[in-house]
Length: 249
Picture 1: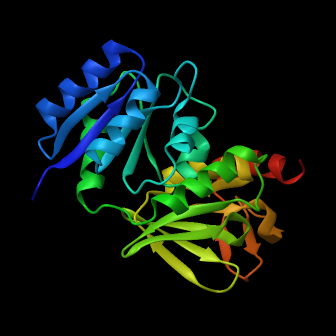
Picture 2 (picture 1 turned 180 degrees about the vertical axis):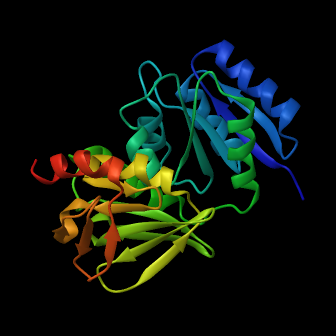
Picture 3 (picture 1 turned 60 degrees about the vertical axis):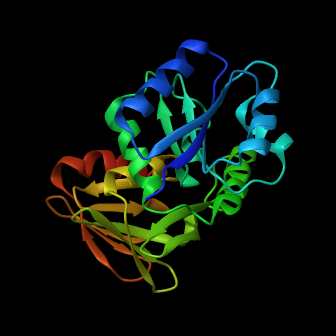
């Protein structure tokens, strides 16, 4: 397979050099065609080289990564965001199904991101970016959507439609309000991190539920919840107290 052409953008030279060195040494499927410290230079390089993937620092002086993409206009490459800390946008990036790497970038995290890129270039970059901008522009609401990686691409589902999520080995099965269910290539722990701000709670090691979609709670050692679609799910004993506190808040 032909290597994916990449452009790296970061205002810090040391971070730029570090990422390039790791890509060249540990990620043979990536060929770095150019690097840039200034967003203005990056825009020109992107238009010239037409990369397959852009590794883009979120925070840069004068023009951050999101503003740079707005200035660029049309694009069809994949994007991997990089950030030096737990940036306010990370939750929105997760929900939008973009990859992101936290500096200092671990080799294993970088290799996993590249592996996902190599599996197939997404045709959904614009939809993901629209979703990301919407998530960044609004307060957290169940009116938001989430991008779900399925076997044949991505599905964009309103968060309020998700009743509960069940762990299924290395996959997760989502049960939706319209009666459908989706098997997606993401771990339950990933959903737990993404959806906690939207009143989702892990009541059992294999179940994450939407607290807004509970019909009834049945008392017991741990107890059980009945969801709006009639599904009955056990509450683990160790989660019971925390769960009951959330119900009344």
